[in-house]
Length: 331
Image (tube, rainbow, N blue to C red):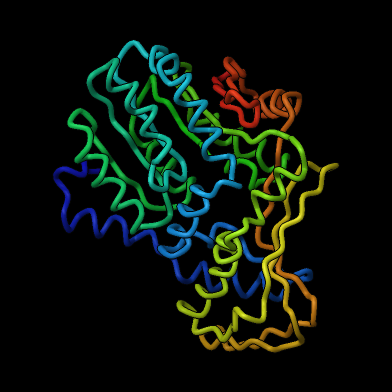
């Protein structure tokens, strides 16, 4: 892997190699012929979807971004002080690294230098973010990696390292059900050294009305974000989805502590996807499940640590008690 400062065509090649149209096509065909129909939320984040998600993060109803940023602002100096030497900061699903800059400010203020490894599936967002950070921080060495989490972590396992800080912010862990989250953390734990730490942002259970509003914003940006996955099928697989005939739906199930997000067909229709050689039938009112977002209680966070054989060493909240930062280490 090469620092961004010395890249040019090398960066472009490394970023573009992460695009896997065959996997997208395979998952779309499998998901839309399932019963019930489904599409993976990992495919939200093409260039257009990533930009829409950045807009979501600035919406007043979408509290997780600002709440997590507040918690980072209050506790980033304490986190930076845990490291006696300049750390390598590895971020899963980095996006624009908007909130991460709060933590990088504290680390660079304390240590003068650091290495930052953002891992993301969007080449365009990752490219721009890496350039922005390199221009902003003279002491920061940026090594961007394009791909799924496992891809990036697999490449990092080939590098010896200790005292690293792994970040998984934005409550992305909520996209996995509770058993899947524990299994993923177990895999992640296998690559941690005794001096590594894992900082995870986890959204908390709260008033259902507050949670539902965050996924049904008044400007309809979340609806555009959800519908973009159909537009992506149109663009990349020559699909025939008329997005005006589908509507966004997000429902919070309080007992399970999760938001479920769907795209609902507003009429009976059949949608061709040319590159797959198929037509997908829809009944009026039939839904495609696109995402879950699980919320956690403190007890559920402790259970997550136990199930993943991790120690929850620190736990911080924003001032409103809406969102948590959780620092884990190997047991």
